[in-house]
Length: 296
Image (cartoon, rainbow, N blue to C red; front, top):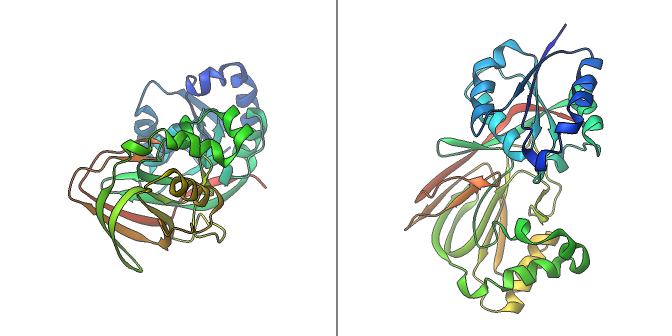
């Protein structure tokens, strides 16, 4: 019988997993897995357990938010032989799940994690760290998450504009030199996103061609500083719709690696968590580094 390690964060998503835990475990065992369970014991625990115990299992299924999945993948990236990974979203931020065609409901997602289709996925490295779907810096890094969902539902992309407009006077630009496969971008940028995902809090990857998670390429977006609300609206519309902005403040390209150099410390987020503030970021795509289980 094949062995499965089930790692879960009971605190993710306001503890929504607790009431579903028995049903989730039943779904995993019903698919024929010999299941070992491990509740995470704090930040970094999923990374340590995945790194230390992965060799004993054919699949690791994790349940929590994107942060839990990030920790598991980080633990696996130090290993040569990596088991397949299943994901049962249970957090407040589940952006990466949108890539995997997962059904709604934890029990249904558990059935996919147990019996879905394993497919290779690219993983990004950021200096000496890793990320699954996004590395970002600057003014709009948290706008997508801080804009209340009811306001998004009512106002659509204007909700992002309203949230961003409150910060227009305090937006900071960084002078960057960005080297990538296609050349060099230099200028003052207030936001950047290096992604391998269809969506980050509603913001889309660009260019507009379909995103492939295993093509060895990142989708990169760089934004120059808007000077007024109309420019801000054009920028956010471009980020939400994958379309070029008329003012030329948004540039986008695909690349397998890039080097971002700044004359000062530049704070980044990796998969939604603080990723440090280096002056130089060496970012590389590790093609098909991890196998993750998809739905149909």
